[in-house]
Length: 168
Image (spheres, rainbow, N blue to C red):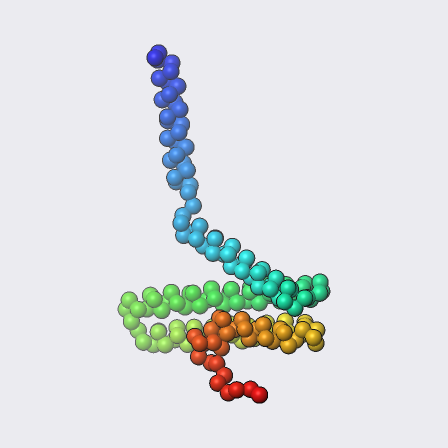
């Protein structure tokens, strides 16, 4: 082989090396990937929940628009509260390194307030959705919500709030 080919091969290898290093340095971190994919999955699940109501309740176009507005309003509010709960949890974890009972009590009270706000917001959201239902849709809506809450543990086995009184 003559020198010309060696120079070309070396130039190609250097170029490939530079490109591979660049790809390695610019690769998104695994944490960012997980965070973004989790966010995408959450949005898909939220849309599936909306479609569930559209299908089950046979919502009109007007109702679908209103439900979507309510969904966006609710999730932006709850996502903000969950973000704040994450901040409080991190504070609790940081406090566990050098435990201070007053700080822990304060953080736990703050977390309880945030959890209460989420629950109140959820109930108000369902109430607003119920108001948008036609009279013939209300009973089915109520049973769907109770079923959803049972599965999520709010009234079910995990939640410990199941009504043990039989209704006649």
